[in-house]
Image (cartoon, rainbow, N blue to C red; front, top):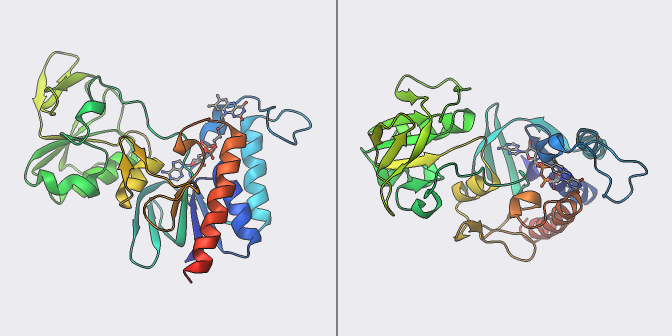
Length: 287
Ligand SMILES: Cc1cc2nc3c(=O)[nH]c(=O)nc-3n(C[C@H](O)[C@H](O)[C@H](O)COP(=O)(O)OP(=O)(O)OC[C@H]3O[C@@H](n4cnc5c(N)ncnc54)[C@H](O)[C@@H]3O)c2cc1C
C-alpha cells in the first residue's frame, strides 16, 4: 500500500506526485498512456521551456522526473475505485492499487454524450455508474453503451443483478472479451426512446429496442466515473470539490483537466500541486 495513490500520469498527476515524494511519502502513479498531451503537437506556453516540446516529449520528461524522485509508475487502466474503510482501492485491468489518500488526475472528463436528450435523462434511466445504480434495475433489461475494457467492467457488474445486458457499441468493434451472457449489438444509434424518462434506443435502421436502463461506459473510466463509484457528491453534472480540490469523500481529490475550467498544462500542474499539498496535510492529520 502506498501513502498516496494517483490515477493519471499527465501534468496534474506528475505534479501531484512531485510534492508528495518530496514530502517523503510513498507514491503509486497509475496511468494508461499520454492523455491529452499525446495530441498536442507543440507546447511552447509552459514556463521554463527554452524551446517548444511536443506533448509526447513533455509527457516522457514528466514521467522520468517522477521516477527519479522515487514514484512507482504503473501502466494500467483503472476501472473502479472505492474506499474500504482504511484506504482507497483502485481496480485496474492488471491489478489492484491502494493508497491512504487518492488524487484522480485522469484528464478531460466526460466523453461527449453522443445522443440528444441523454443528459436530461441522467438519473431517469440513464446512469454512469453500474456499481451505484445496478440495484435499481434488479431483473430488468439494461444496456451498456461502450465497447472497451471499461464497458466490460460495467457489464460484469450488472450481470450479477439485472435481467439482461445488451452491449450497444454504436458502430464500433468491441475491443474487450465480453462473455456470451452479454448480447452485443453493433448497430449505429440514432437516438433515445422516451421523454424525460429513458425507454430504449432507436437504431439508424429505424428499429427500436425497449430497455429499462442505459449505462454509459464510453472509452475508459473518467475521474467523474471513479468519483461516483467512490461515493463522492455531485452538484448537477460536476463533482463537488472544496478549494483544495478535495471531494466530499475525505482523502479523495481531483486535479487537472478532469475538474473542468481552463484546460492547460500550467493549470493542471497548479491544481496537482494544490491537491497534493492538501492530501499531504490530510495524511499527516489522519495517520
Ligand atoms: C491538441 C491539443 C493541444 C494542446 N496544446 C496545449 C498547449 O499548447 N499548451 C497547454 O498548456 N496545453 C495544451 N493542451 C492541453 C494540455 O494537454 C492539458 O491541459 C493537460 O495535458 C492536462 O493535464 P492532465 O494531467 O489534467 O490530463 P492528461 O494530460 O490528459 O493526463 C491524463 C492521464 O490520466 C490517465 N488516465 C485517464 N483515464 C485513466 C484510467 N481510467 N486509468 C488509468 N489512467 C487513466 C491518462 O493515461 C493520462 O496519463 C493541448 C491539448 C490538446 C488535446
